[in-house]
Length: 348
Image (spheres, rainbow, N blue to C red):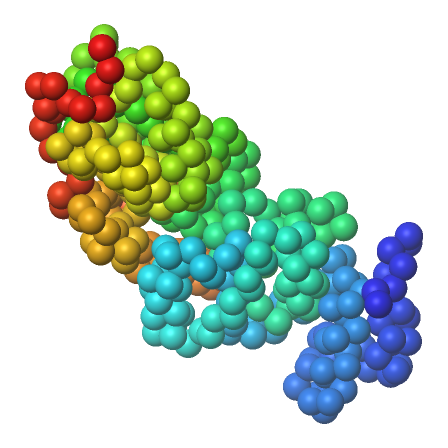
């Protein structure tokens, strides 16, 4: 059980919880190599439980390099995660660093637990795949006490933090232009949700792709949630309407896979009746029928670049934040085709 948080935690609180003297706590923080491993573990655990290092002592802790980096991810089940992690670990290992993984499962208590660990100074840097500052910028954890940061795959709005990811706008524009080149004019964008920054960026690219083709092509957005079930549900909502699209630009591959499944369940042929394009090129994208045309993210390269940026920040004890946007490649498979003269999906 954590100590009460009604007043700031003191070094005396840490010493009492660890069962050691105040001097031992101070020595553990400043010169950990001068205390035994068992004492260091007790003090570190007490610091983590109390959150004591969310104050001036945090700076002293980080004077000692741990050569460890923590990756906070909302879920390790995301099909984009393994390749990004491979890139992160490869670059970290090449430069003498280890990587710890914090799987938050989107739960604030879990994230807070990892933050208490981070606050002990046992990691030198933090990679965020969550799309927000840890524990949503909890005032009990001042931003200045956090180690160097880099965010990956999902930028954090309003924060001066280096970001590495695919160029969502440019890649989505290319995908939309490809459908236009096949003759499609009734193209719907299935989003990842109304407040998803990546979805909004990809929607911007879709709009640019339409605009370059013709100012008369309608911007048509339908909200999804980034899951295959969300893609299925979006198709069902569209079939209530009087007008159907001939093509779908999907926020991600999971959405696109759900769209294809829903259309086939209704007896339609993809790509003869409808064209569907995804984003990410997850491993399953080439194994669905028909094979999914999509945008491939350079996931391992994104991970490598993110770790280089972070370790440079650590080495230089800071530095200006930068956005590093990487090119996404259009992967053409079988889910897109030319517009049919009398598509079965088009109502009169």
